[in-house]
Every structure is written in C-alpha cells, then in structure tokens.
Amino acid sequence: HYHRVDVLTRQMQIAMRPPARREALLEPPLMQERPGPEAIEHELRENAQSILGYVVRWIDMGVGCSKVPDLSNVGLMEDRATLRISSQLMANWIHHGLVTEARVRAVFAEMARVVDQQNARDRAYRPMAGDLDRNIAYQASLRLVLEGKRAPNGYTEFTLHDARRQAKAAVHSRM
Image (cartoon, rainbow, N blue to C red; front, side):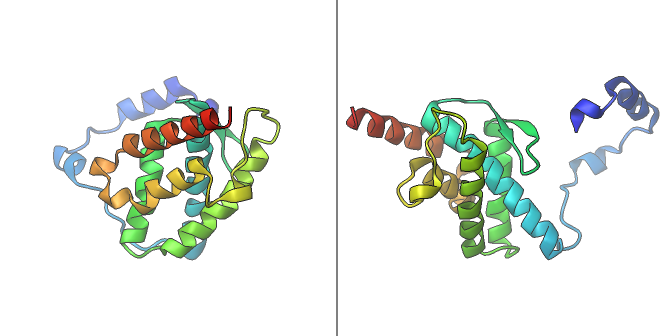
C-alpha cells in the first residue's frame, strides 16, 4: 500500500537504475500468458467492486471522487480515471475471451451485495442489490463494461452523465 512506502528512498532507487530505452517505452505491454482462473476471478471481483463502489456514489450522490473500500476493506481513492481503467480491463477480457459476459454479470450481482454491505451505515446510500434490473447505478456500471468496447477511447462520461440525469429525475418524480 502506498502509505507504507518510503517515497524518498524509492525515488533514490529509481534514480540509480540505468535509463530506459526509448523503444521499450513505446512498446505496448502485451499479456505474455493467460492468467490462471484464481487470478482472473480475483481481478474480476476487485474491478467489479471498485466500479460499483465508485459509480453508485457518482450517480446517486453526485460525488466525483470517492474513498471506496476494496475487498480487503482498504479505502482507495477512486475517480473517473480508475473507473475507466477497470471498466476497459473487463471489456477487453470479454472481447479476448478471458471471461464471458455471463460471468461478468454474476460477479457484478455478487459485488453489488458487497458494496451495499460496505455502505450500510451511510444513511444517504441507496442499496443496489434489492432490484438490480431497475437500479440506475448498477445498470450504468454494467453498461460501462458490456459496452466498453464501443466507448470512444473508453470514455465513461456519456454513460455516467446519462445515468446521473436519470437518477436525479427519479428522485424529483418521488417528491
């Protein structure tokens, strides 16, 4: 965890190593071998939980940068950049056959319950797991992954803003 790193020492270590070759910097990092089933499952769960934890606060509460606990309950700062990375990772894994859409949907349903439990003490929080098909934040989270391949440069803004407008309209219609 970054709080346990001595930054000055680490910077000194980096400064002492030989400079990287320009060609190496321009070479895209490609997966050398397929991760094992445990690694895939771990990444699916972590990324789905992170996406849901961030998106539900963004859409339902309008919070753009959130401290979201991971599966070990370590609070991580999440924002659109980390959302984009997580959603695109999962979209790419579907595209390249590492996971199926059905598995992604199952993990999202499981992680919605986890995120609901992590936010149980927040009175402003609206749980997702009770009605996944109608929960705007949950559906937007899924859309970010399932439609991620078609999102220009993986941008999340269109999906987030559309869902935020829907959530605000739903709140106003209940008043």
